[in-house]
Image 1 (cartoon, helix red, strand yellow):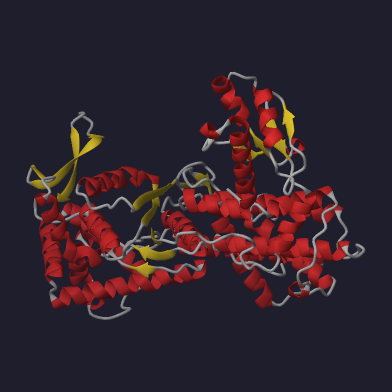
Image 2 (cartoon, rainbow, N blue to C red):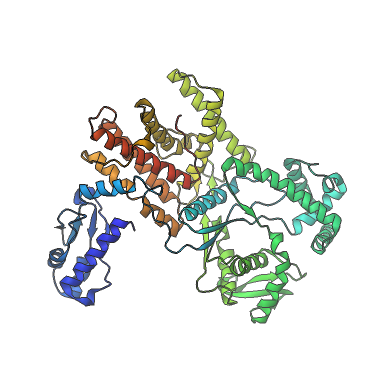
Amino acid sequence: MNATQEKLKAQVEQALIAAFGADFAGVDPILVPASNPKFGDYQANVALSLSKKLGKQPRAIAGAIVEKLDVSEICEPPEIAGPGFINLKLKTAYLEAQLNAIQADPRLGVPAAKTPKREIVDFSSPNIAKEMHVGHLRSTIIGDSIARILEFQGHDVLRLNHVGDWGTQFGMLIAYLREVYPDALTTANALDIGDLVSFYRKAKLRFDADEAFQETARQEVVRLQAGAEDTLHAWKLLCEQSRREFQIIYELLDIKLIERGESFYNPLLSGVVEDLEKSGLLVENQGAKCVFLEGFTNREGEPLPLIVQKSDGGYNYATTDLASLRYRIQQDEAKRIIYVTDAGQGNHFAQFFQVARKAGWIPDDVELVHVPFGLVLGEDGKKFKTRSGDTVRLRDLLDEAVSRAHTDLKTRLQKEERQETEEFINEVARVVGISAVKYADLSQNRTSNYIFSYDKMLDLKGNTAPYMLYVYARIHGISRKGDINFKELGNNAVLLQHETELALAKYLLQLDEVISSVEQDLLPNRLCEYLFELSQKFNQFYDRCPILQAEEPQRTSRLVLCDLTARTLKLGLSLLGIQILERM
């Protein structure tokens, strides 16, 4: 809730008590943004909910509240509409004062969190010896945006990359490479990532078909877990090779992460099992150590257990996740732990969260959040794949977006008969291409699947990154044309006269509410919707109100509105991980 809405809510609460007595303290005034701008800016709907309790008509209740309601500093006189809605319209002078107040504020009036917390965002999480593919796109982009918003709000954020760097797959890969390419296990950079992935696939086929090779691979896992020097050296080389490839992607996307892979928690796994045993939660089932869960059953309707130690003594993802959860609470002292993964892992998180709660490992002041997301689909509505049916490599996807942005820009420059340097063209294409991919993902409700379309995401019209980048560049075009330095405008008075100025002003003042809602519900698409609507309101203002040609003091006032819009766009896009351009 933004500051204006909070003030009005408090005033309506006081009026309610003044009208009907102290028993009504704490009653929600049901103050919401107006459903239609012609009715005002906010409406209080509490009168309808109190009719039965007070035994009066809602309009009579609304009238009694309005008699005691003093909102004269903020609003025009309240109006009662329909069966008892109290409509409130913000005063132009109030809006002007609010905009004047945020001009000098680098946070544009957005307050930092009152109680900053240690928060962990677990995102991206690729697997060593595999290339990052389109399936990693959403976790990486959504997780980064959530981390940026929490950091902006003043929280102490630990960005963790929980990479798959341990387990059976390494025994399998090392055993195979010992046979076919031993240099890869002793020499850095002997393989590139594509060859490594190819060898991994061949090793998996061999593992699935050859029992003798399975045993060899398992022995390599035992050697790895025991810290055998040659196996450990080989494992480190494979991890380092993958890390370098991941870093190329992260630099392209401007993502910062701290890697803490599954191997980090390996020494803690036996302690997890011991503590679960001591708490009486462990049950042996077909040789495996399990915890039976409430609300989970198999196809036969029997209780479904979460296995924490396999019958051969090995551990699995659940054991590692439990160990990491305990470490994050006890050592990292996190108060909110956010896991950004695909929706298909929902049951896994519900299960190991339940085990941790049953074991008493989660203090009352610690919140666990699974942030699920849907699939990336091709334009045929099926899982996004290459024409040959392979999973799309993330590097190829990003390169293609930049290439198409480059082609689109050159075509536009030719039409406009503009001459630009190759350096300018390459930089604009990079920013537009990467931003288009990020925004196309973030602008969807993350819980839904979405269709990946280069044409739609690179469109200069509609709810796209290029559209908003163009609006930002348009504002800086005004400053260049008028030889205006926005930073030198100082703290000038905003004067709102035209209806489009008022609409833009009201929207600029909603930024704090939007960021606060994303901080809570972790839905970045709400910020995208806000920025798109803001861009549209600016374009309406730009089309109908002269700026550089206006007379003073209106000219400076409108330049301040331009500056506040540009700064809001820049801040909002930065929280989505999107760079801006002053020229396109």
